Image (cartoon, rainbow, N blue to C red; front, side):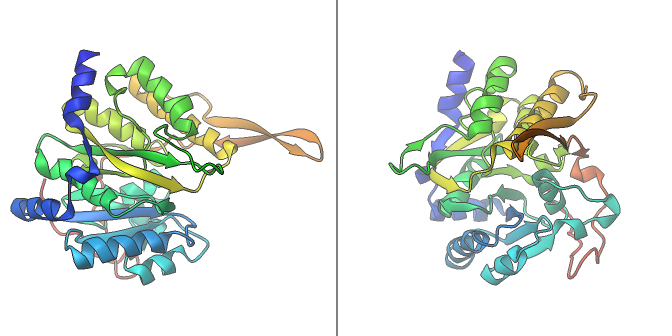
Length: 328
């Protein structure tokens, strides 16, 4: 308990501690580059707002972000066009490393992004944000630029509720509070000081991300947190209060699938890689007044560390570059 409390005081900061000019000066002093990566699937309504705010504030006004990339997870709407018009370089996840195949999922998009970006520091931002600010990026970068020991920075925030009273809470989402936090408290108590372990806004060193296996689905945030602390110690993790955040909420059945993915990630890390015998989730829906069973496969595949995968080919898709050599 004392170590965990000490970590919280030592490794928790506020976005106001990291103003853009200070972060830019630290970046220039260290001679590193920054990639902001936005995974998106059918987010035509919100992705341009996210991309445009970062492009204006942290590409044009303050030259902090060297690459602003949207990884389009095979959207069926105009997500890619909206993102490109707002200033992002857009890649369709299925067209990156086609020889490696393709999976559906957020983690897959993040893993593929490591093969088409070159930044020494990578910042991940969700595409469905409606209440947020570019200070998310500066806040997440601050601890990485201030301390070489820090490998991973997690964001946390007040989640703006949709109720009429406009209330806010530092609780995570339903999956965080009902699945991730109990799992961590019971089996990884050293990580219980992480306010929102599943937060979609986080940053890391490329060298870390390329060394870790990446679950292809929504387990990527939990796996990265657990693996970073396990390999590099608790002080390799920091967290930043980013203020407030609002985004689109998901249906309970979709959240249940996310919860199942988290359970697989946790079990794999707790019990020497053992996977469930039947990775399926059985749910029930009403059809003409009757309860009908629906079975959904639980994504359990994990991509190998990116530094062990083949380099992206020169033309895996339109204008797909081969990343140059990277610093560790």
